[in-house]
Image: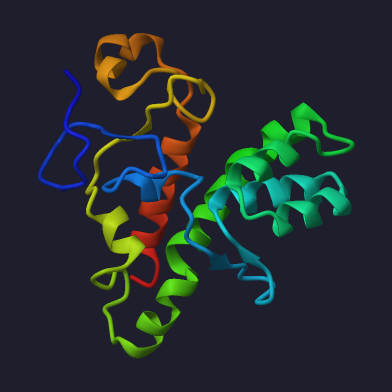
Length: 194
């Protein structure tokens, strides 16, 4: 039986997440709709972390047309589909850059969300601590628990198993790149400004 998917830091088992619509853990998904600004271009707004990743993928390979189409779509699934059609794509180059891109997109998602701009501008806070009610507070509430994308369909960004089957199949898990990058984002953001 898998550990609870609750985000309480008092739990010690893994945090299994997958669907962006999950009321408790959907925020960990790349497809979670929570628009944020690019730190290098204030005018660029990403609707999801998936939009960011696919946009950066298109830019990496010089495909400006696809990059613009990704920004225009409201659907993270459409952004993902467009990302699979990037011109001049090279798998080796993408594999060398994909984790860095996912990490940066999630750092922005947790620190530059449009819905939270006013909160951060108007609320004094201690460096290295999240403000109550923010997405970052939710991430920090996972404590040091392992974050696991329990997608039965993805063995690269996820583990290739749904949460109910995860513990019994741990030896056969996929790479869980998203979970690992989210844990790195959590670590980086905790250390920021300390």
